[in-house]
Image 1 (cartoon, one colour):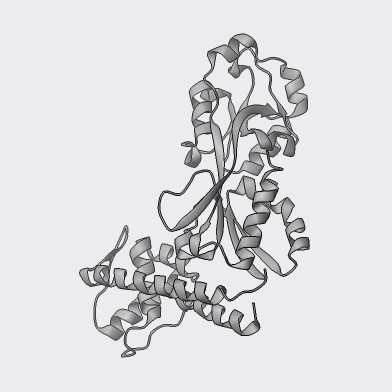
Image 2: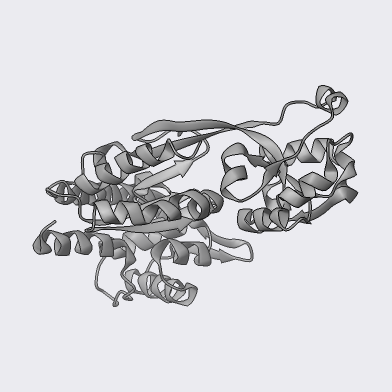
Length: 320
């Protein structure tokens, strides 16, 4: 991408993140509508601040200045957050249309890129980002030295339609939005533990014969956590954590067993736990998981996006 094109793209990206406070009588600007849209979507000042990339006090000051400048009340402040007035509700879809137009303009600018260069924002669950994506990045950099990756290792889903990320690795296929998706792999879950602990346990005759590691309560709805909850006594759970790294390290050091996608076993230095035949015949099969690569349809032909897309497709063959 040329320097002039890069500067133009940066200007588009900054439109929704300006932290300036509107002056009284300045009229209604795009920055004001972006603020209204962020507040309408989030329902709280702190949530809107996170969306705009500023702090909560800045959002509060901008809202106060906007309402004072327009002489109109837009949001009611409550103990539970903020509530949009009728006018704010009517402004939200107009702001959404402007947001889409800005995104279309940015895609038009970025489409002029002729070689893979620039930043690609990739979002993935922390365990996958740490154990599979990050180790592959040196190879990507060697192949495309002008591409830089912004890796968002988070449990929450970035919204690709709002350009919160360019590409995503997820466990499920998207059901809405102008997105394209390809399934990278499908893998079953296995019971695993540290090699020395596996040797001590031998063939398990009961799942309660060892300690267990599982997800924290905020992720207890995950299929693997639900399987553990249905088959293991709560008193046998030694660790609950929403950190995949913490789970794998604790298991490797001998704390207990856990249910983990099969590709993680070898990569993290674990070993599969053997089950006695009688126990294996009594248990329901552990869940199976899928991994999908997802991107916005309009960005698939952008050289840097296409380069990272193809690279992930290639690397995923080594993950199973």
